Length: 353
Image 1: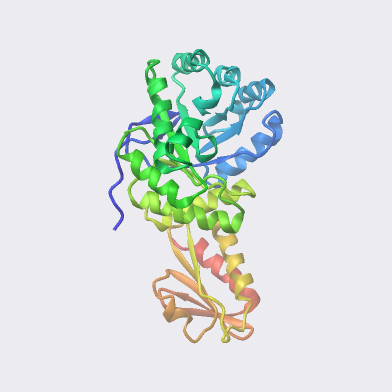
Image 2: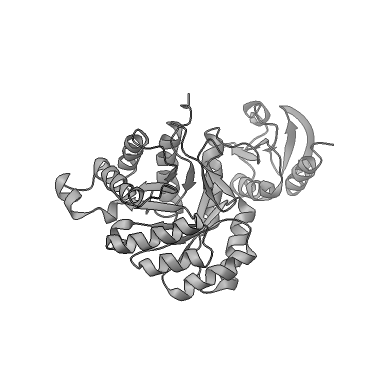
């Protein structure tokens, strides 16, 4: 049984509340040049339509910081500015309307520079995400723990948080990430015991669509199952849209989100006489725009299909050049293979009639 979610502070990122018992928010990051306002806005809108609730944009230049002002006027989800090294970009991003900034205080520099960022954030009540990952651990912690460890990640993050707290600011979100899945899980278990700030959870540098999804599903699944985490990003080397699809499915599988159609399908076997792989992929794509909370099954044969998928609300089972449409385990129609998909979609579109 999944553990009860840990209660954390409520932090507002633009109009989106994180922590405090609110739903776990789904994030992604644009891969456009932030300076290209048209391309960046188009991608953010596409991601928002897919279910992204918070978007992060890199700000490597003053031109990118200035672009945030125009981007903000054209999108309807909070925009987070991702800053590394140059504190002036963090200050500028806040002034140009960023809803949150992500920094690693360890690479921003002196206390005076961090103070300048904190002052700007405090003036506009903009949250700061304190981000620490395994690739940026301080030299003294690497020596103390003889390498990168969960304990070192937590110590680094909490030390950076304290620096900002000592400057009189606590509108914070924490992230500690590692590409080592089990280390990342352990680090979250440790930090959840020591702070009530909202936690942004993800497996950094997870990899390609295949390896990244597997690592993220295992890592995020274990962390979220412990009741830890307030906002997540599935980091994939690929189209950011895939990150949103994966995040939604992870949350739904854990019972942390409802809504949206879940597609289940059987593995192929020697009884399969239909293009099951193609059909399953077509069904998954087809139902993505249908706002129903249902389970749809795609089965390879008519012999066992309806029975094996009895828990599904509706489904199709392939035969030789034809297939069955079934609902709650009962057959409601037989169609040629090329008509199965339209018949299923029609049934879904009229589900509540």
